[in-house]
Image (cartoon, rainbow, N blue to C red; front, side, top):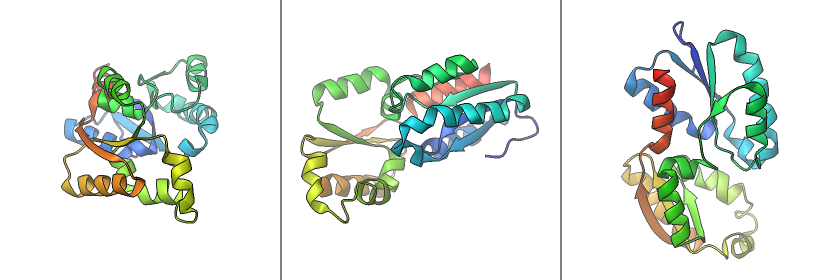
Length: 201
């Protein structure tokens, strides 16, 4: 989202959160928040996330009073937190977006109930074919399905919006992976809290 003339806070975010964050900005009239999203495909190379975020912080620092980061740890093994500490920038809490959408306590309970759970968000449901089927090569090598998903038991759709078409797609995704299906409406969860805090400060 291009910065408005009144924007004084920049949110650097994962591209997988763009739709939800733009919706929150628009719904709440947070015109003083600007959003810069990095490519969602970085999740395939989490080792590149920390330095990519650092470069964006340094590129934008002079233009904003404050910068915050809407990335969880996202598989960086603490390296993102090290970069952010060095740059003096805070991020949303949590190990991944499933945790902050569901809420940390609720996600922990979900995981404890069935550790063999595969999670989808609205973004992942929309892009299931590209990111999961094609991205993991299952369209070319369907025999890999058991290798990738043999230890999973259920697919949990953590929904940000109440969308019947997405629910149907998620259910079909579970069937395709041979997993039981569970639906949980989370809304924007702790992402909304994080952005509201950014808007107030």
